[in-house]
Length: 118
Image (cartoon, rainbow, N blue to C red; front, side, top):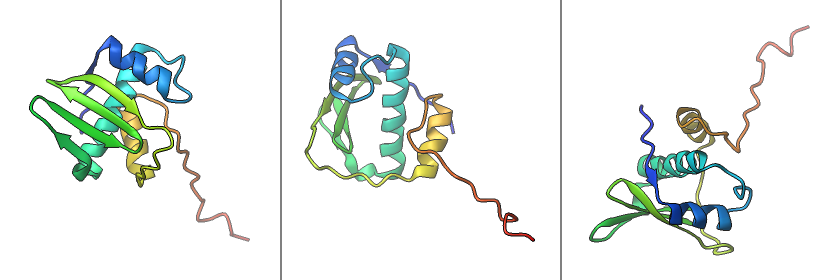
């Protein structure tokens, strides 16, 4: 598996940092990596949440619509409070986060199988 970091327009970057909580101070590079990870996730896990138009493909990632045109993220719209659901496969999400070198919001707690020994 290979990371495909999409290009990001300044307009899409501004839309992202102004509408997604916790990303107000994120760098341009990290925003491109996070959005690329989210697009990758939709492609692999929920391909039915991909909407094609003449030149664009919009990936529906929960309340976030990420529009890509010719390999570049051109628009990010956050429908806050829209109630869109997205079941996250946490293990795969963490794998993609490592691949794209971004922090994951999901932390795994691994149980030691031998911890109950006497």
